[in-house]
Length: 178
Ligand SMILES: Nc1ncnc2c1ncn2[C@@H]1O[C@H](COP(=O)(O)OP(=O)(O)OP(=O)(O)O)[C@@H](O)[C@H]1O
Ligand SMILES: O=C(O)C1=C[C@@H](O)[C@@H](O)[C@H](O)C1
Ligand SMILES: [Mg+2]
Image: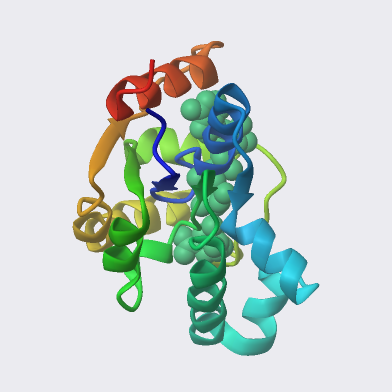
């Protein structure tokens, strides 16, 4: 049976949005990306919120929006990269659904983060070398939170054109969905 809420978490660039959207499509379930939900409810980009209210202000909004989204049923949710690491969010998420940590090496995260157009305020104004060091250091701080997810799926797949498909299959297997 498909769980009522599938909740993806992990570091920036681990593929929460990309893989979450593909999983929801495969399972024919509505998809909610928490960053997109925040942007639509606030009518502002994540970057604008960081600029106007700082990271602390963003985290308060993120928690409030999380409590809206995670009440909906039969959904796939992709969290923001930092969501499980603030307040009691990880415990709340575990209470609300089947949480999955999309685990990935810093090298692959770094590569993913250079793809796509998403603006990530925490990575702005850093050289590629600085971003690399930042990922390695921040991952160590965040890992204890991500590791509290009920499931972990390793999505470290280098240069495989079927990456998204493979990640979706791994997720379904982990969650026991046929
Ligand atoms: N498993 C994957 N298969 C294929 N592409 C991927 C995968 N994971 C990430 N990518 C690529 O890496 C980029 C970043 O992925 P994505 O935006 O989904 O990460 P995220 O975890 O949602 O990050 P954030 O926390 O910043 O929202 C995308 O451009 C996507 O194409
Ligand atoms: O890892 C983080 O702290 C963040 C990740 C993004 O998803 C956004 O939620 C925002 O850019 C902060
Ligand atoms: Mg995302």
